[in-house]
Image (cartoon, rainbow, N blue to C red; front, side, top):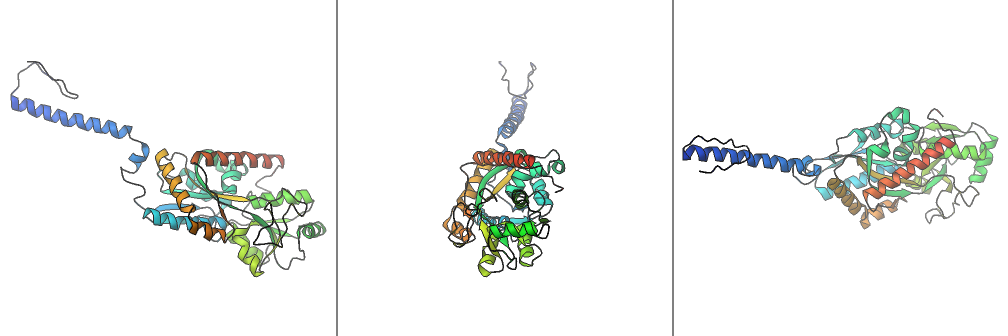
Length: 358
């Protein structure tokens, strides 16, 4: 009688009873099927294994924000969290971890498990500038490598905002005042090495005037109260965080970084109009995850984020705060953009010898 060889079945020339033979074959078939199932599981995409075959998400998602509540990054994160939560049927919890120019939340995001349950809303400071200015602090971590861009979220024009009592009406008068009062003007930033800091460092060097830097670890959420309270008198700051205060008169605008005058501030000239083209930054905010996110999950996160950001309700809500919804074609395109921004700012930092200790 010929023998039938099955995976994991030992064969013998010794005769066996039909019942025992069937038993052995049954056990071996079970073992073979289990082995095959294990091989299929090992070959399955990481995203399937990570979620146990279940649709993402099956539990709350954490959205890390590197600044205190109230700033543009926090505002867009909260609106995104609300709408993603509605789409997914799971809570998306905003976790504000301010401090160290955004590095506390940034490091937590880079070290997070790449399962989609920890995401990060960053900006030009955390995801393009910090890699160079805080290289010794970050050690082996590199945001451009250890985080993957999911999509851009918004772009925001900036304004040179001032306390109402500062006796200047435009940037030309600001320059004259700063030159005549070296060191007496305090300017606010979102922390050492943040783009509001770098913008003002570059501007002060261009105009040849000394001003005193007052960094705030909580971003615009702390910069704005400092300006209103006259702890600081001047700042490059985003319009999304300041427009209501500019309209109410608690702050005043001396110039904008937009290419043309803004309909919301028709009487405020641009920096270029006033002879200071190229000064100041128009900021962006984006959604990121750990670099090892599975491709299928990354694609889902991109599609869902773009879907909720592109709704008329979201565009209108953020538009009222002068935040323009600008999403990315793909995660690959956004990651490439952020890496290019990182290289651009690294060059600025090196050429101007800007140190974290400034």
